Amino acid sequence: MEALGAKFVYFASLVGFDPDTMTAYGPRVLNGLGVTVLIVALSLPIGGLIACPLAMARMSDNKILSNLAAGYIYFFRGTPLLAQLFLIYVGLGNLFGAYRGFLDDIGLWSILREGFYYVIFAFALNTGAYQAEILRGGIQSVPKGQSEAGEALGLHGGQIFRKIVLPQALIVSLRPYGNELILMIKASSLASLVTVYDVMGATKFAFSRTYNFEVYLWAAIIYLVMVELIRRLWDALEHRMTRHLRHEPIKAKPATAPKEAVPA
Image 1: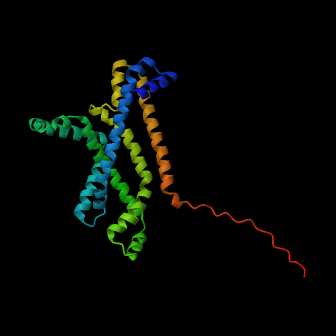
Image 2 (image 1 turned 180 degrees about the horizontal axis):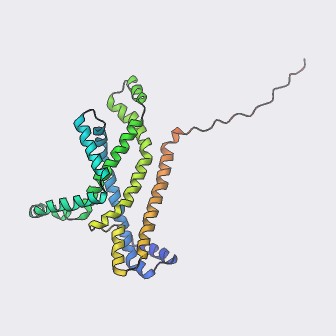
Image 3 (image 1 turned 180 degrees about the vertical axis):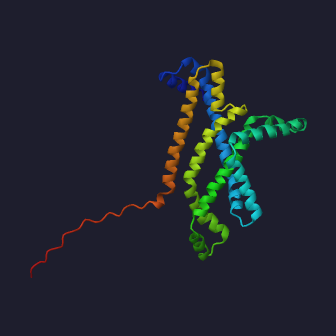
């Protein structure tokens, strides 16, 4: 990380940034980049684990399960992520703070007092609601004839879903999942509001010490580079996973002149 920080400072000085500010706070911002990547890398798969049963419940014939799942999705998609983050950070923080002595005795207070874990929890709950709707839309887009074909082959419901419906649903959902990933990367900047030193948190710290506005330009460039890398990676992944849907054009064989009849 130190070598990367030195290269980052050198490159930034070449394009006109203040080298002293870069030397003093550039490594801190890069450490914040690691925190940002960790937040997204943890919250997205945890949200995916929430999304799978949530999507199944949303499509269930059981009205109670369906309505509970719909209410969860409606709340987390209909309210701002910032409000959800503060509800969890302040609400759970006050709740756990009331039992601080007990939690300290069992060794959990050192974890529960950190804003990082509340961020992961809030982001996972939020993205779980969005991923559930993405997955539900993908599953419902698979024609019913695919399931009927699986039944004709003697497969049971679990095999049909796992081997036929789910792979096709994931291909349909691939692009929306990529959009959700990009949105989570940009939304991760909210973590700085609850004392987490991600990219934006480290940037705000640097600005509070230097009052040099260019540090916010660093943050904008870092987020832009991350989004562009994800976009290109997702394009390559989508191209790879949908290769069987692309048909190579059949090249017509060149016409050959008919052979002349040989006179007897």
